Length: 304
Image (cartoon, rainbow, N blue to C red; front, side, top):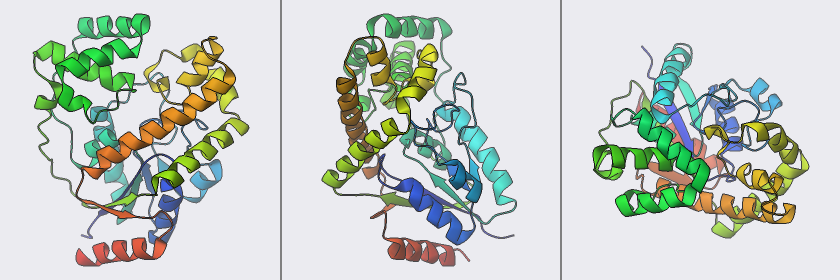
C-alpha cells in the first residue's frame, strides 16, 4: 500500500497561498482541500477570495462553496467531514494539498480537536442575544477577564470564537484555555507544513490592493445580496461586517473601505502570531518554487 501525504500550506491572508497551492497541486497531481473557514460557504466568492471557476476547473477542489451560509461548520464537524473527504481522495491519490489560513481548522485537520462540553442551548441563546443587542466588544471584554491566556492569541474579532470560548468558561467555571489539552490524534497519512511569509510592509500593501480589487469586481454588490442574512455566523467576517455597517448608515463608504483594509491587516497579524507557534511549519517566500519543491521532494523521498 502506497504512503499517503498531506501537503499543508498555511500563511496570512493575501500572502499568495492560493497561487502556490495551485502550482504544488499541478506538480504533484494532487487535489486541493480548503482549510479556510469562510471559503466553505456559497455566495461569498469575492469576499473570501475563493479560487476562480477556471482554477477550480483546472484542479479538483474540495470545501470551496460546499456549504450553505445557514450551515454552521464548526471545527469539530469540519474535522470529521474533511477526514472523510481525505479518505476518499487518498483512495486514488498519494498526495493531497490542504491550503488556508484558519488556524483552528488546520489544527482540527492535522491534530484533532479537544473534547469540550456540548453547548448549553439556553446559555448559547443568551450570549447570542447579547451579541445582537450589545455588540461583540462587551463579550470580548468579559472573555478577557475570564481567560486572558486564550485572549492573548485568539481572534477576538470573530464572534463565533468569542461566544464559544465564553460559553465554555461560563458553563464549566474554568478558563477555556485550560480545557484545550492539545492531545494530538494519530492520522493515517504523513504531513508536511509549508508556511508562506512576506515582509510586513509588502504583505500590508498586497492586502490593501486586494481589497481595492475585490471592490472593483463586485464585493459591494455581493455584500448587498447577503445583507438580509447578516446575522448568520458565516457572515461575521471582515469585508462584510464593515459594508453592512455602511448599509446601516453607521459609516461612510470611504470609512468602510479603510476599515476593511485595517481589519484585514490586523487579522493577518493575528494569523502570523498563531502560525509562529507551530515549530513544524517550514517557512518560504510565496514565489520561491525551487526551494519549496525541493523541500516537498525530500519529504516525499524520505517516506518511500
